[in-house]
Each structure stands twice: as structure tokens, then as C-alpha cells.
Amino acid sequence: MAIPETLYHYTPYMGTLCSILESGFWPKYSKENIEWLEFHGNKEIGLPGDKELGLPMVCFCDIPFQQIESHIRIFGYYGFGMSRIWAERNEISPVHYIRHYCVVANLYQDLKVNAKEELKRLTAYTQNYDYISESEWRYVPNIQGVPGYVIDRTLYDNQRMEYFNQITRDKAMLKFAPVDVKYIIVKFNRDVAPLCHWIQRRFTPNVAQLLMPKIITCENYFIVSNTHVT
Image 1 (cartoon, rainbow, N blue to C red):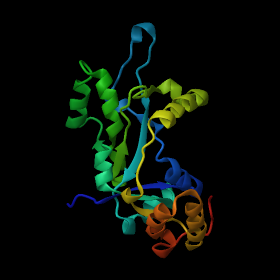
Image 2 (tube, helix red, strand yellow):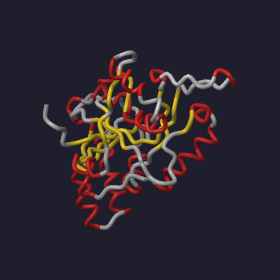
Image 3 (cartoon, rainbow, N blue to C red):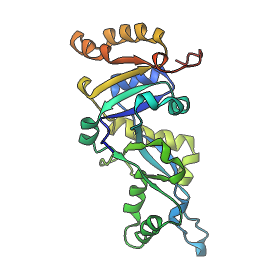
Image 4 (cartoon, rainbow, N blue to C red):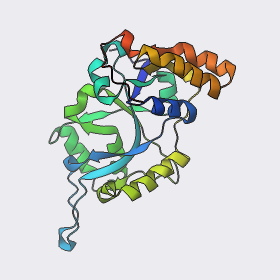
């Protein structure tokens, strides 16, 4: 199988697309189930094992745009196609899909003895086997001052999550240049003109001329609902 030349990131909102164009991709802490790793905690003191971790990431997929219809119905009709060279330069990696109780899961569990913290960071690049159809890639920041993960109890504290996500916004935005963008994806044909006007107001003429020809619309490829989310 050929190595994909384009990685895609989707969002339900035109506003988020504009924010990414202006500031870059924002890694946010995503809830990931790690029960398959069987961290048992300490029963003697009543400390439960970790069942979930919050891991900072930006997610992409390598499903070709012409085959993406079922995927974008879930993740959104707005987004970007980014070059693989840019992805490799930023250490964006494909997800390793693992089935519970398989030999690979057992090998991961063996790491718990001597490399528990490293293993928890590694889980940012793993996913349950049930999601293999997503063809997912992830950017996971490894930057001083940005926690590699947050424990499961934090995931249900909105104030704490806002605190940690603000850290990634301040220190770990995933930047790109206009040349790194292969496609800017919008839902409707009627989205193109207002997006072009917004680009012309926010960027220099040279940058605007690079970005605007890269706009493509889902409406030209798929049947899309008439609901317009901004």
C-alpha cells in the first residue's frame, strides 16, 4: 500500500476552521480508555487503577477525500488536507490499533514493570481495535511544561480540563505555513465566497492568493444535508 500523501483533519464548524487557519491546530486532552493495560492501583489503600487517561493530541486520518463520506458525517464537513511532509516534520504518527488480550497488548502490559510513565505516553499512539476503520494519525506534543497526560479523575472536572487545555494552547499549538496546506475543505458551495473574503481580510495578498485556490467543497463530491453549522 502506498504511503498517503495527504492527512485530513475535520471539524463540524466553519469558525474552528478559521481559527486553525489563523493560529494553528490546538492539541486538547482527549479521553482514552486504557483498561486493556490493566493498571490495578493499590487495593491496600483503596486506590483504584487508572481506567482512562487524558492525552493531548490533534487527530488526523489518511482516508482519501473521495472515500471519506461516512467519516465526515461523524467528525464534520469542514477541515484541512495537510501534506505528509509537514506531518512527518512534526512527528505526526499513525495510531497502533490493539485488541485486548492479544499478544501485542500483552507486550505493552509487560512494560508496566519498568516503564510505567513511558507506557502511559505511548498509549497516546494506541487505539482500540474496534476503531481501525478511522485510519487515524496523531500529533502528541512532547514539550517541556506540557503534561504528557492527566489522570482519569481530572477528566470529569471541567475547570481542571480548561486549565490543562490552556497550557497546550499557550505552549503547544501545531503551526503550519500556507505551502503545507493541500486542501481547505468546506461543506457548501456557498461557504466559499465568505471564506475567501475572511482570508483576504486576515492575511497578506500573497498568502491569500496561496490559500484561496485550495478551497474545495463537500457539496461537489457528496450529498450533504442543508443544515449549516457555523
